[in-house]
Length: 287
Image 1 (cartoon, one colour):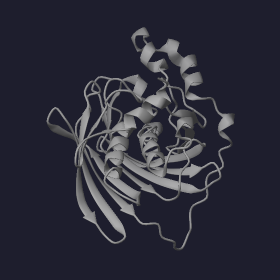
Image 2 (image 1 turned 120 degrees about the vertical axis):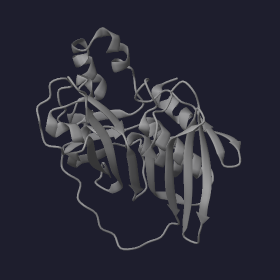
Image 3 (image 1 turned 180 degrees about the horizontal axis):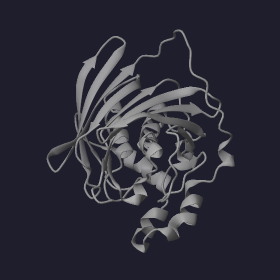
Image 4 (image 1 turned 90 degrees about the horizontal axis):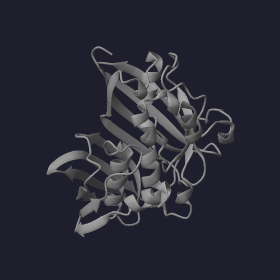
């Protein structure tokens, strides 16, 4: 099964009972723990299985414990409210009998109103930039051999960073950065799956924005990093088989944490989603 097809399969969660679902672990961006976007997307899908005729406009989540990729995740949905215009759900993800993640999500009827958005930054076309696989193939020999297989493993999201940095010896640089991403397997999927796929991808490179002003990356082994929370707002219809541009920044770091933001635009320049996340970036002593 191709990585993109595997991701669609992972998001097709199993219903165990009313408001109780099971999602498969593993796959995704990392093999050592469940990728944050993975559990966000499965939680959103679990909520969608309890909502009729409304699309998510916002979600707010906390990462509580690392997810174990070797076992399934149980998702329990609380139907907090079904109102005239808004529906609210709370989702708890459980492994080994403990919460690893919880999330609140709000769903809204389709309405019209005043419209305004920021303009998309001009960073060229996605075809101008190397894809992630090409970059990693060039860098793999600089890593210990035990990391090579995972480093080169195929992943479901096609990603092209704008002006990518060196993985191991990056210069200190501005926190603002951009990338293009898409997943061609999203073509033909319904709006709920489009939201879940974009939610999965929204966790990519986000925390890395906090590392840029300090000349740091995950590959140096100088930091303990983890996503602490995640918020996302959906603004417009999404077709994630097409290229989207992720405009990222990190206006603050301190207290072993970094605050990160992102705006997601369609290739045509429409702002389709906004993201915010705080992440742990604790220095490892002696490194």
